[in-house]
Image (cartoon, rainbow, N blue to C red; front, side):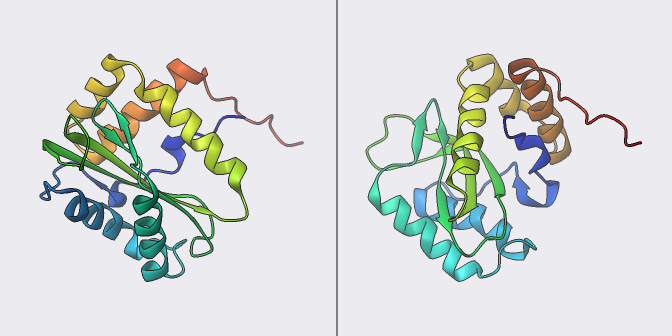
Length: 165
């Protein structure tokens, strides 16, 4: 079953008005949202993992989207923070500014969960109309609702488990 990003999102971990316009500042700003996340066991270790992964290769997906991420022992389960920039964030070597950053932390022992999450995210953002909806959400709650609606459109309605008994 595809991973539902909307179930991982929390308004406390979404910033729709990033101040940083440079890659390092924006990454720090968005990742700090996860500093108090109950499933991040060691924020400093998690952040170092993000930086190490970022040094390997660009985390830009194109179309104004970046996906800084770390597979690490410093998270108990998948954690997600989102940052949006109206002016855009400059990433070295990238032709267009990044408007949406999805910062992910996934347990090192569960690479399948990470791949499923990235697959779902890529399906959601490949359509320019979907990206426009995410860029126009007015509140973190609206952003989560938009993600859920896009997931239902792209993945199909979420199947509810049968009633117990």
